[in-house]
Image (cartoon, rainbow, N blue to C red; front, side):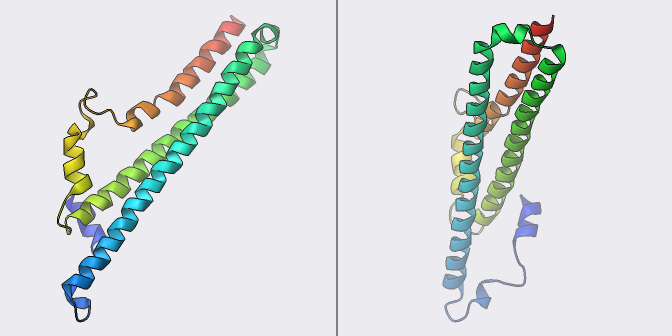
Length: 169
């Protein structure tokens, strides 16, 4: 965590730069910045959940419609089916890219939160909570959502490819 600490902290500003109350004002400012960082990480998680809900709903509707139209689809041109499969796979791959992007963004945000905790009395998120959860290494104890959500779009891609092949073969 030292690399992020070096990038995070402004060495030209310290507790002595906070007027008369010195350390108290510095700690209050640090705590406010910490709260803001935690809030922004939480908002990224909320946006990620909203994106997942949208894409899961969209793909679920598509699967239901495709199941209802299986008869007429069997008569459709292979080129039309290929175009549809490419579009659907592209949507799912875009979903995968968004999930990955949100995961990386949140990882960076929580790394900053962890570095800020170095200057606070407790390591609430970066050490205590994460250690209590076993750092996500044992799925029976805690399975991080990011491990699950990264596979769902790929399952839809596989389903669309298999469905396309089943219709043309």
